[in-house]
Length: 172
Image 1 (cartoon, helix red, strand yellow):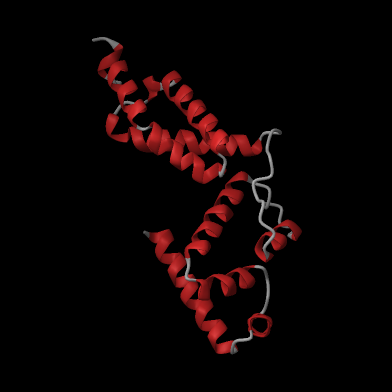
Image 2 (tube, rainbow, N blue to C red):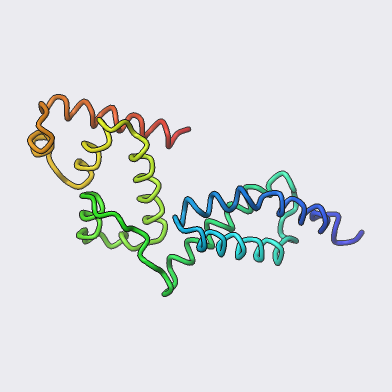
């Protein structure tokens, strides 16, 4: 038997890869927040996938396999010396992150998790978004209450409900 029985046929693989380009691009755009970087990331992912297509033995897993290659390529990009600053916002959460002495702070996986968390927080209703950001930035309930000029019980409630929404998104 030839080597193609355990792996995808090249034409079928290439067709699947081409069919996934738009999905890969949108995922890369979410990660990089830059169109050119996203296109470069998709191109690099496609190259790696073509180069290593013999390692994929089941076309049912091609989507997950490609997303994994893309994510790992992005993480490697973050680790490289060519890394540009990805966080441009100056809100309290980002200022807190920049000041933190956490040794895992610079780890690409940690950056990706924080980026995903910031995106989820942005999707929260505004009433929950600001209290959650301030809470994550290290402010006490009392300080948030004073800053937002709302009762402390409301702050606690909004933070609790905001966390509940975030958990739903992560568990979905």
